[in-house]
Image (cartoon, rainbow, N blue to C red; front, side, top):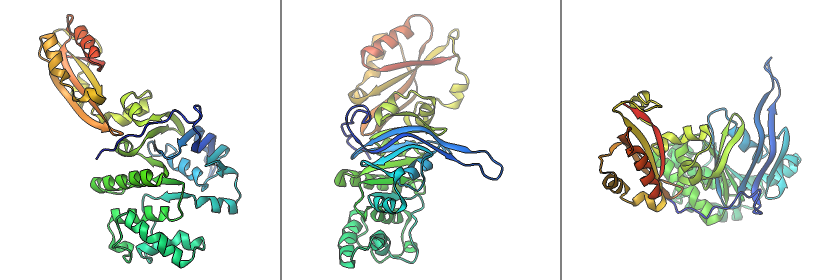
Length: 365
């Protein structure tokens, strides 16, 4: 499943493109409890989500992802800093104003949070009932949402009669019931199998494209980011360590945490038995391992045969992978070449002439 990428905007905080969601210098510290010291979950978070975009926030367990998303809908208050949604400072609202503002912020949960004794229709209708919407208007709103998420024939089914993917579709429809500007997704696919995950991500992308709803999605799965996000922020230890267009972060990661996340997804992680025997300096009579990275149109070019002819030497293929990142082709190939003489220098020079990125990983006997 691939999607055509949007034309990514520059950083909205610095290029005159107002973000729909903004966090400015946000910190969140939880007070000391039961003899333990205070815990700072987020440190100086400054982040913007452009209107109509999908921003994925990825981090390991305990990195601060859930705290971040709870600040956006006001379930948590920042210790300092500002949280702003469409020009409204969420972090400064009183309880009544906050309840009203939450109607413009939909939420999708990891474990669906459906009411077992309400049908799919009634679960979707719940936020409208709470808002005091007349029953005729509720029906006129809920039935099209059921059709949108592919459950038009499941209106009278109870959660126990639905699969995990169907339950999440109900959860998405419920989140859309109040016509929100923003959709928050808290690990919405982590409880689903891979095939169902793809279907849910395709649905979220459709919601984003057709309804122009801005989505802030948190996850620990880089495959989710790769598939759906326009931009990605990497959080580690409560800090945003890297942020930018998804394709850029996958192809040119700057931070060690980002590199560790993408290694297995992009095929850039060496097999363990090879990594163990890798040396930093040339080994007599050994080989050099070189990673070639190719993107965009270069991904379909027969560059390996061109290099082989140019060097007049056989190149060993150690590992390779071609994938799509945010809808754009991206591939890596690890090859071996004699590590002595001029062949390594000639290879790297020729590869760069072909528009490939090169990296000498090390040497093996």
